[in-house]
Image 1: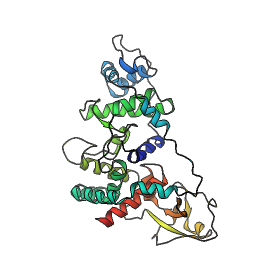
Image 2 (image 1 turned 90 degrees about the vertical axis):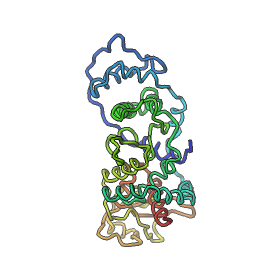
Image 3 (image 1 turned 180 degrees about the vertical axis):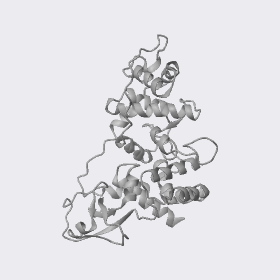
Length: 344
């Protein structure tokens, strides 16, 4: 597993909240329904089986048989425990190092080649969802190096381990496991076959099962939504952006001119900040280029080698952070997208 390309998807998992479950009726399971294997007699398993019956129509014996084939993976728990983001004590060049992992000549060249090979699907996605092709390509590049590293962990093992052996995020992964089983039923897949990241993300775009149900599309017309198929992945990523509010024709982020007297910490920064341009101007912060009619932006601070960089994020920058709640991630997607378009 190439960790840099799965780091993004894993952070996304840590921040996205799962869907809440409807209250279950307390009904005993049939006496002949038992779970064997690593999750036998595990707290919460019987309730999950009830949930799958009451909410999704799964026969208890069917769910029990699937869970009996799941393997508890301690390595997955260990990896999840190491994903907590480290607090920066900058300026120390953290952004420059992060950027360098993804904006390489190899990645840019492969991005241009991926675009060339999938030009028809990217053109259709851009026309249908009004999301520029370069941003779809950049997401797939950062998440899985254009399909080169989609993950080797069985999704069933990942989600079952995290649903029943990782209390800190058990509710979220319980929901994702339920969505995964519904996905495999609907797509007529063997639940033991799909493989992806250790956190349960799948395919070229590293969708979690809940994202599959919301945004995956059949872009090939074969009657299936296949996250491992480049065309379906392209359609799904574009639909994800559209569903989260992408504004066609609007910039993503622009560099800010900052007065010499401005000091780091004078204003709150981050993708979730909101400032009027007139307010920022009082602090000596102005856009380096026209923003058209946009008057409200976020203030972004990047800990670059040699000092902080400041950028102004627009709505589309915020949309990218719905994929991964990180300023560095979203800025990497933006800059990689521009680099791939220029190279192509």
